[in-house]
Length: 122
Image (cartoon, rainbow, N blue to C red):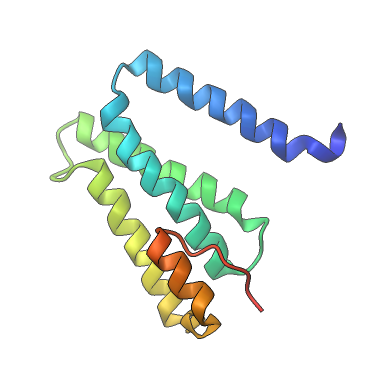
């Protein structure tokens, strides 16, 4: 059971996220930023080059998304959090380009077209 802790943590996190979304009664407003967050996790982990960094990306991007949501609720943010998270994902993709990860070839193009850059790195 101890070797499956990432799976258990993922399931507990998913149940917690679903509970927060249901309690907030703002499914539509929360779904867009979460979809961008999921893509961002793969992009960030890809750029960092280590699979375990997906956990770091989850923590960092969840914090960014939470801040964007709070700023929108306080009417401080001039744009929708989904747009803000999309901008973050584009910035992460540009980071991948700056690190010349596009030289991975077809995998980079395919993953980019699919919305995330999660292909294997050499």
